[in-house]
Image 1 (cartoon, one colour):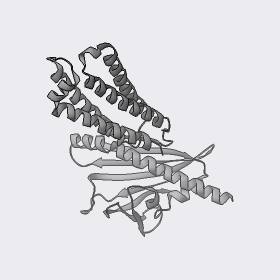
Image 2 (cartoon, helix red, strand yellow):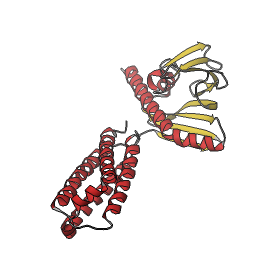
Image 3 (cartoon, helix red, strand yellow):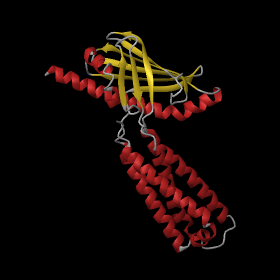
Image 4 (cartoon, helix red, strand yellow):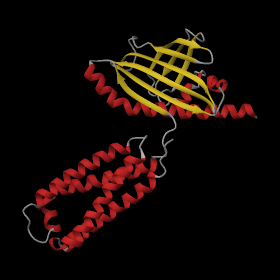
Length: 299
């Protein structure tokens, strides 16, 4: 867990507030100009419209950031800086150019700045709770294939790690994109299992790599008529190796999206964050279970 929920909440509220202000400036430009400026200024309506467009763009960026479960401190601090600049700009406007504003205009600028200042402080405080994910995850497009990998160190011996990794029915308990796993036949190399998605969609997989205590792999039967996802080819590799403080396991997913090069690139861009989130959540959930099993055995 990155503990980014509080920061994402304030970013979302900030986004909604910015969008509201932007819409008001675009819809009621004339009325807003009369309320804010003491004397008619030719550039005022255009300036307010441009400000409204800018606020809507800012709101859209904040909305996207708020949806990112792997939100970084740096991204939040950048938003805090922009909010702080707005507050400073408002203070300068009222203090040195207050003569061009009406009493109502000064009040509006002040109130808006106070709200923005609140968001800046709240976001700054929430950002301090964000932790960098322990797992190292990477998703990229290489030679037309989508490569997704994650590595995670765990304070548990290989025996516990391997036992958890090969508990196929329990895989559904830790993988957010899997609701159920059934072992259809066999064990080790050649084993077949069926995986179910969150909406009941399902597909068959065959174990095409198995090295006891080290690694295993599955090939998904994407050629099946009822395969539900837009992949022409999909396979995964799971492995573990010893480390001084325990073990390290890694997961490697290789997929070939359907479509031409452009469609594959677009798919990768759209799916990149989702793949990272799924892999990091899986790695953390697995690590928690592995360490718990190791502790239980110790006692």
